[in-house]
Amino acid sequence: DQQVKQNSPSLSVQEGRISILNCDYTNSMFDYFLWYKKYPAEGPTFLISISSIKDKNEDGRFTVFLNKSAKHLSLHIVPSQPGDSAVYFCAARDFEGSQGNLIFGKGTKLSVKP
Amino acid sequence: DAGVTQSPTHLIKTRGQQVTLRCSPKSGHDTVSWYQQALGQGPQFIFQYYEEEERQRGNFPDRFSGHQFPNYSSELNVNALLLGDSALYLCASSPGGAAGELFFGEGSRLTVL
Image 1: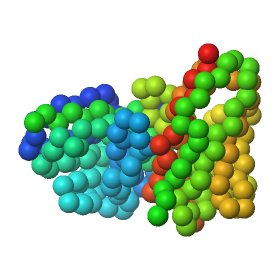
Image 2 (image 1 turned 60 degrees about the vertical axis):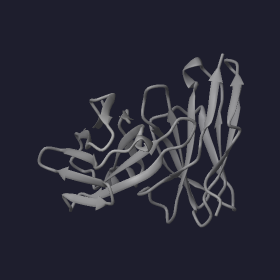
Image 3 (image 1 turned 120 degrees about the horizontal axis):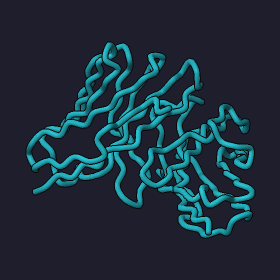
Image 4 (image 1 turned 135 degrees about the vertical axis):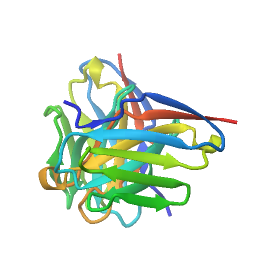
């Protein structure tokens, strides 16, 4: 049973517009959420994170929103750039139950068109 | 500052064989986690090593085993390889024994024929 779900396998956005990537989770014990970006032939790279005690975290063009009641988080990229084209993974940490390993979604492939 | 390095980058094995993958963590990191990423899937946690001991294990059979050395480097061993073991194996390191923000290597692509 998938605890972290990214229901959109792909997303295409025009350069300069906003990209919104969504993630849903089922485990209310998750205390920390992260987004990773992965280019082909490279390992995932940490992008941004948010603690479960917050509802928003911003870092430059990237903002993550957390809605605990809906068990939903989203990553906003504004403005989108062609270099943002990559696979984005949502991940969650279940610290109490798992001593800190990360549970990943299947990823969303973002394509930013010039 | 060297990041996480993994070797080999690619390898091909046949069913029933054994494989050893190696990982050197990022400088200053003492915790190593291994993940398996099958095609079209997200990384799946195999196990984590801290202070040379397996700290936690995911839902993988005993054919998957590991080791951490005093210099914090780590090995992942898979015995009796199955076709379904074909995947990208990612090593990640972090400081202090908890996951949080993981730093990943480029991975070892294993193909089992």
